[in-house]
Amino acid sequence: MIRHLLSGADPDLATATQILDTAAEMATVAGREVKKLPALRGRTVVNLFYEDSTRTRISFEAAAKRLSADVINFSAKGSSVTKGESLKDTALTLQAMGADAVVVRHPASGAPHRLANWVDGSVVNAGDGTHEHPTQALLDAYTMRSRLGRLAGLHVAIVGDVLHSRVARSNVLLLSTLGAKVTLVGPPTLIPMDISAALAPGTAVSYDLDAVLPDVDVVMMLRVQRERMNDSYFPSAREYSRRFGLDGPRMRRLPEHAIVMHPGPMNRGMEITPEVADSPRSTIVEQVANGVSVRMAVLYLLLGGNNL
Ligand code: NCD
Image (cartoon, rainbow, N blue to C red; front, side, top):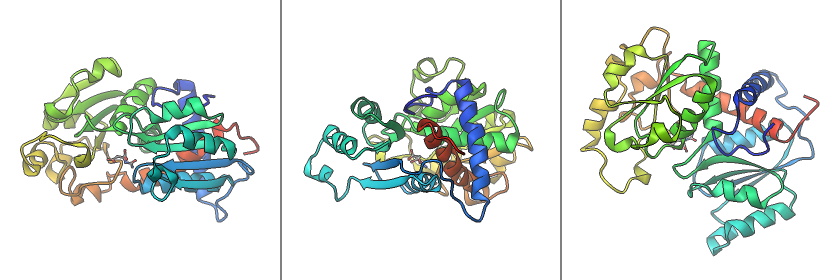
């Protein structure tokens, strides 16, 4: 097993499969009346969040608690970080407190990698800048596998603000390990030039959503990340929705079995309409539920848990 989970490229096929299989076992716990396992009793998991987050932070907290770990939530607001304490000093504090795992979200790409050099425990990247978000990719893969029965050979379109999306990056890396084919779709301004060469060879790029839809098994819509944009990347929100938003008529171009995903939070009406988000093809709520099982599996395996 790997020691840290920093990138969607960290797990090889065997490890990724082990994580997904373990997550399926963890999911059975969620259906029980007592949703708790003793596997990480006496271990400490620190959630270190330097950036706002709702579902990811709650999901990691629920995952650690279901495994009986002690959980310390540390958010940058109200901590010494606002007094200018460096990431390294915070890391040394966590180290002194005996953290077995540190789950970190940080606005700077690469921050979790730095942290991994400073602590003895395992580091899990819960989103670093525009770089990576590997547990999101794992829960997405888990959701695809449970809805469609397989991952190898699937065709996945990832649509929208690829440039600013750590979700897209981690998905491209992990899906290529799992044998799925990815097509990135969006306006040229939001698709980095070197993306397929830099990430996974074989990743296709298209600027025409309508042309891609009839051929995919999965369409993953990305949030337009206005908070990370300091330029105008497209003429107007209306124009963006018209070309790259998923609405009812577009959804009906998909093959019968195809599913629609979104990592949340959604801009309803911008990249996805309520009709699509709330349709039976949408896996958006399942993704959130699966997130807890997948994060349980990741923490359990990284911390070398036994007695499952
Ligand atoms: C994503 C994130 O924060 O990277 N959301 C999430 O983790 N559920 C995607 C986003 O913010 O658009």
